[in-house]
Image (tube, rainbow, N blue to C red; front, side, top):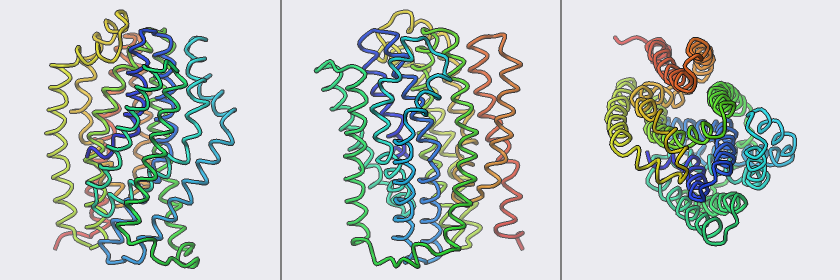
Length: 421
């Protein structure tokens, strides 16, 4: 579960370090850029998801010869996409930062962070592949080790560059690159050790037509699904930016709470991806259903614990993240909404894991597009309540995601395994 925290925690650490400087403009800029990178890299999260699902299904089906091929295919796609993002960095940066609607000072800080951290793109995406491959092989402990190492390196580099050497926004971005590069080296070393090197993969095996067509179809649908999900969070951030620098900074502080709780639940979804992928590959219907139930039960257990933490310690955590009195006061006003998110999001994250592990990608895509419509409708209905209405619309989206997938689950179960008896 904890192995899924690296991407948001890089932004959390950067936001916290800059927040300690006490400048709401810098905090808003780095927070906005961090969210943009979370969303940008998240768009290509299909690299982790599909690699995990295909690897787990290969193990369940006894197709161990395919394991090295799945890793190499993912790394090739990650490298190509990452280099493409670097080439397109100038128009991409102008488009995404301009669309957020922040003040000139906030946008300038965000642009400074973006221009440096974009160079980590190939590293981040390759790390997605390695993480998915390790978890798909049920080696979550090793995946966790890689992520812990990455985050410790990030914390050390951020403290040194931002708080000690006073490099500010530049230091936070450079620290993220150092951490991602180090994490990739460690992850690849562990993967090679686990697999006894890259077992011979022929060109014909690597580019086998049926495998490639299936990979691209699943990746396409997951990418569209993820784009719809990202649209929700970008819209949320943009509306916060238009409400002013203090509201943007307060939402950014609370977004760290939201991301951490979400990635805890997504860690359980990773377990569902591996277990459901493996049981689907083995044609084990009972195991598939049991995995689904366990992930949901564990999800509610962790969600209740996280909600209790935010209720009891939320104000102290806000004070730790930012030194600005006005940002602290604003963030406390909406803390109760953030505390509800883990519980309301259990079904959403659990069924995400089930659908990904089973590669029910087309259905995920369609249901997420429908959930986007629900979110926008809720926002229109609640916009008169300002930032409170914006947070409430986000919670409605959580409920819609989980509810729609729960309703579709029995149908997909029958399609994949047939009726019982």
